[in-house]
Length: 441
Image (cartoon, rainbow, N blue to C red; front, side, top):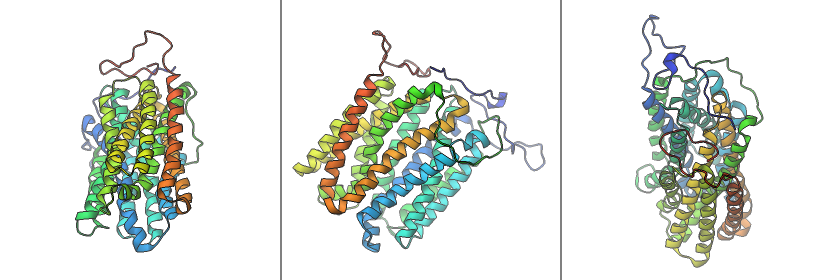
């Protein structure tokens, strides 16, 4: 096991202070650039994570409208969804360590600018080709932003508390996806210009985040020249055990996320017997909203316990979702989705906490990128596979089969995570106070 450590920082880059930046002087060379206080910058990074994922689910309520207007198949719909994840994967493979090299601030500035361009493509889209282009660019920009912002969360925390940084990452990620779908569905259903208004709102949000990124302090003290190259996923040898546990947890949790984000809105309109766009948003929020709540409720549980119990609850909840399709019960469907979300949130938080506690400072961005590489593989492959068969099998049979697969994965992960529990009979099961979470917990 490798203890948590950080790279040496100059006095102004210590926790609670701003790091020196190459552009810290004004035009005269004597004045310093205004910087956000580190605490504000910390919450800005959490907002970047949450709102990037908020943007990723914003198009979901519009897919049915796009299908009616442009006449594409269910497979094309899931492919549009999955190309986003492919874009994220490409970014992680090409730029996984870019913010370790050139700094968090410039990477976030450029990634947020790219998200603004992607949102503009959605805004002016006139065919499915525009959707593919917008989703691909959105995925690339989000992949870069998530790796950098996730690393900056730990850089900027006043106590370098991996527990708090992991909790903020998990809660903002999970809540962002659900709120993005719900707010977009509300705007599509009730606001003027339903295919434009959600993206106009996003443009305003990203403009504010971009301004914040320009003003944030740079936490990376020793920066190097940009070296953009393909890199195979790599995790430091000393933390591969913790990374394996994290990968198992994210596999269980995000695989169901892929199904809900791609097929959930269609499924909700059938189960809730309505064509109101809010149905899809409510179904996704039932999953992700309860996930965020579970992370807040169980934040002090040991990482292995969160992953094991969370995966078990996720499996039970998903089995209940599949059962509700046969019973044709809308209340049971929503309740089962919420139960699944409770397990999703706990499993995801356990995965993050077991990893962030042990990442060496010099490898933060690259390791977080590897983590999201697993996550987005988990979310894209089931969605694409379901899209291939939904036209021939039908929506409900497809969801039953893939839901059963998720149940099996959840049970396997629950057992595997339980076997990583501490061997000592008297091992401490809860994290007390604000200290860094030891991986043995």
